[in-house]
Length: 91
Image (cartoon, rainbow, N blue to C red; front, side, top):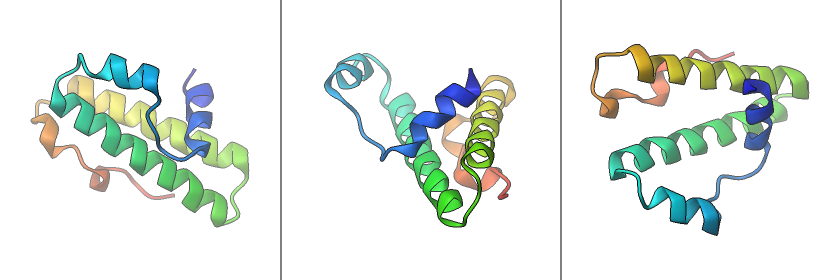
């Protein structure tokens, strides 16, 4: 499921009408973290692709970052505002 989700980061970051309406019900801090992750993962996909990595390798790297961010969100005691792109290891 992570690999399938990682393929969506091929496109530029955007929010359509349906997601916008659904996101309105979420706390602002949650929306900020999600948007920051969306921007970071889309940029990372483009950067790795531009470096000549195979699409399967790029998608797997994105999926691993998604899994890592889920683990941090579930098991980390730190406040959510400390979650930044600095915690992820570059490939």
